[in-house]
Every structure is written in C-alpha cells, then in structure tokens.
Image (cartoon, rainbow, N blue to C red; front, side, top):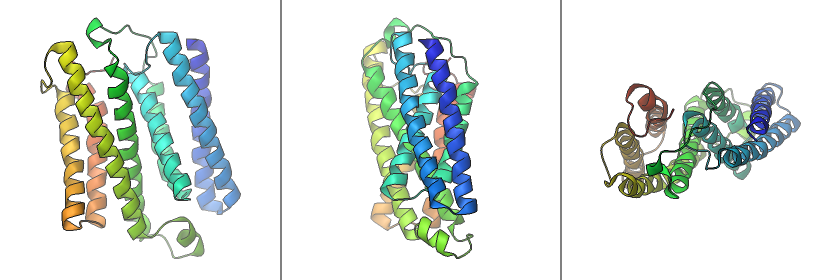
Length: 271
C-alpha cells in the first residue's frame, strides 16, 4: 500500500508542476484553452492526491495526519482544494499562476520529509485527531489563498492596462472582497482547530491548554486574523493595508507550522 502511495504522490507532484507551468503559459500566451487544461490537471492532481492520502491511511492503519510528511502533503491538498474552489467560483484562472507555486512548494517540502510510518502514542489515539487536524488543513488552505489574493491585489496596479488583465483579474475592490471571504473561512476553521485541540488535549493530558509553543502560536495566528476581521467589519478597513496584514498573517501560519516545529519543539512537534 505504501509503495502505491509513493507512486501516486510522485504522479501528483508532476501534475501540480505541469499545472503550474501551464498557468504561467496562460499568462504569457493568453490562450483560454491553456487555462482549461491547467485547471483540468489541477483537478486530476487533486483527485489522485486524495487517493494517495486514502492509500496512506489504509497502509498506516490510521488517519495520515500525524507526522511532518503527512501534514505537509495534507496541507498541500488543502491549498489545492481551496484555490481550485476559488478559481472555479470566480472564474479566476490567473489565481492558479500564483497559488500553484505555493502548493508545489508545500508538496515539495513534504517530499523532503521522511515517509516512514510511526505508531501513535496511546494518548494521541483519539477520534479528535481527525477533527482537529482536518480543520487545520482547511484553515491553512484558506489562509494560503488569502495570501495569494493579497499578493495579486498588491501587484494589480503594476499590470499594464489590457483587455486580458481586465477580463481575467478582478478589480482591486473585488480582490479585496474575495480575500476577506477567504480569511473569514480560514478563521472559522482555525477556531474549530483550537476548540477541538483543547478538547483533545484535556482527554489526552488532563488540561485544555498548556501554552505549548504550537498552541501559543496558533493563538497568535488566530488573534492576527481576528483583528483583521474586526477592523474590516467595524472600521471598514480594506485595501492595501488589509492585504499587507493578510500576508503577515500567512507568514505567521508558516512559522506556526514549520518554524515552531524546527525551533520551538513541544508536544505538538512532528517527526
């Protein structure tokens, strides 16, 4: 089973890479057919990525969400899924040219990790694992898309005026609105992540909160995005400063996932 998962993982990487190249070609050549092929490759990659996660879970005898490799590939899956939803929902294939590299970098990071299957310690064998980690994946995916949308927003004024850009990139106001929706989705799921994590921690260690580095930085991330939404709703805060804030928020997400695990190990550290 794990050999099959390795084959699927390799195919998925190739499909995401090919989709990324085609998204770039779409911008360079400006042919709608290329965008459709890129989207088709991303959909195919996502389906096979899902299959790879399922095969990994069957082979490991548990949910494939418990080590650095497994969470990284699941993180890439979340990015691919959420970005695809936004691409299709808003007919926005240019988003793929910015989101695909982020997805490929994350799955490339997964490829560099050990794929060895580890047994869970007894305290972590709980049904809360699925709820806790799956909500984190969707949250991180949504924040990743908001990061990409914010980058596009910041670059929007630098694009030369042309029918292509006007047709395929929304106005800055609409980009701002879409990014806001992505942040709102991410914060909702991050809230679920923290709540389910607290319940799981109480069941496993007898305490809802222990100020573990991962817990602390997850809370910092939650506060950053909560402040973003508060200022957006109460103070009509939008535009360039909101986009910069969303970028900073995603940097915090990456540090929470990779930086904390590398520099501030704790009970949440992935192997």
